[in-house]
Length: 155
Image (cartoon, rainbow, N blue to C red; front, side, top):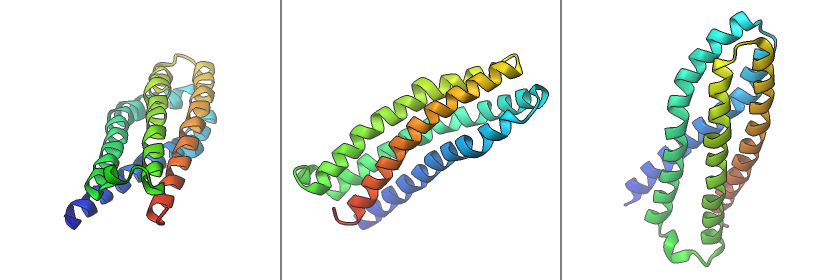
């Protein structure tokens, strides 16, 4: 049983690192760098990024949440939902829903528009929009991270 918990935790943490880390990388490195490029450089780069990233990030986010839920179930959280640990687990799960919804409903479609943008001005407008959505997603992820740390610290 301990091996199952270890594997679930490992995959959950690895997925969370990728999901959160790649979002931060886009927010603080790629999008700002994009603003300084001419359209002739932006367009092929955005198409390549969109084709690869959008295919990967949705499943990673979903699996991260799934493995977190499974880890909680295997660890017995369902029997302790009235404890601080159980309440924190439920709050983290409930918060994960809008975080993944922001990515799926706003960031993903905006990224597709960004890759298909026909002018530099359109790219810059959409980049500003995706940055706004990314800040919302990152804020939710920071709160979830704080909740995960609280759970593992015994809260």
